[in-house]
Length: 51
Image 1 (spheres, rainbow, N blue to C red):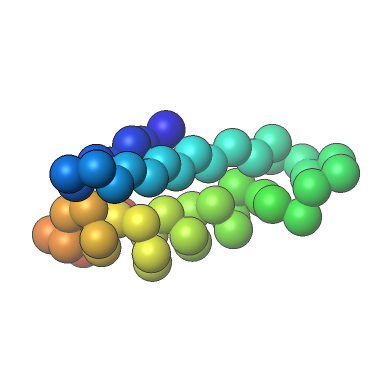
Image 2 (image 1 turned 45 degrees about the vertical axis):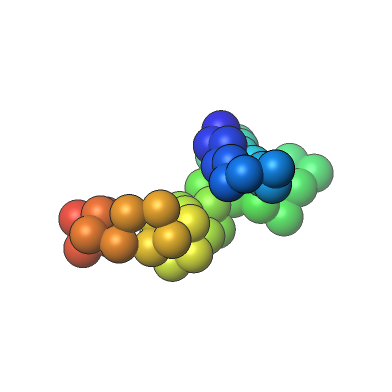
């Protein structure tokens, strides 16, 4: 889980997926994609080349 705050604003993100999607369309592959393509570039752009 990540919480980001700036002044009076704050937001958070968490990612959880089972290896086998029983009732959720979220998979470990889709979670990895979201983290790599959308979350990490905002938090730390230089990390995306290592993921």
